[in-house]
Image: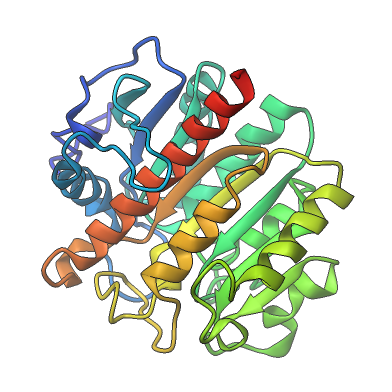
Length: 313
């Protein structure tokens, strides 16, 4: 088992593209690890479920961007990762992530949220410094320890800030609403970023309603010099009505339409990659969660392709 070949590694591909690294600008890879969850395990099965849900997208021509990722997308499969220890996982992930990031604009399918820290470390090496982040989540992930352990899926934001991997003033959190002490909930605000809580976002769904939120995000990125922006999307940012299949569901969350509006409207930012994490199929109903995740990834990809086409004209 030294090569970490586990039965739950994905057998299909996203949008049925040919498996393997090909000459394309964009690439999907799965991170089938859930060894750092604090409630219900199952996110290791997320990459497979997201890929399967993508089959319903057919030719994948996006109704807003009028483009498709097919022909511009590879699927490298799931990376070879141990699934029992967060340290060994991160050690194994880093060289594989770096190799892919040197060739592609990457979209990662989780897995639990502990995978994002090594991805940010890899991006730091690729870009030669910290990046901005747009972080969709029910949880702030800024705790200084993980139920007595030094690191986990709820500490990665704090660790990334401490390591200088993120630009504080260009760090955005959306949908935060879980229980937690004020120091953790307000951490990103305290270091100069911006937390848009789920309560603050209630009732704001269309682009017009979200205009003040979008304007502040754009202004922060402009003030930081339009740096590379990384999107990390924890599926539990959604209310459990839209995404029951996750390990730590939190009522009172965002809607699918809200998240799509934000991804679509911020298409012009200098995106450098995305992950979608914490999809746990054992708790899903009617594939609601995996379908949402697949659609978010597809929308992100089509937004990038549309912007690239626009820039080339």
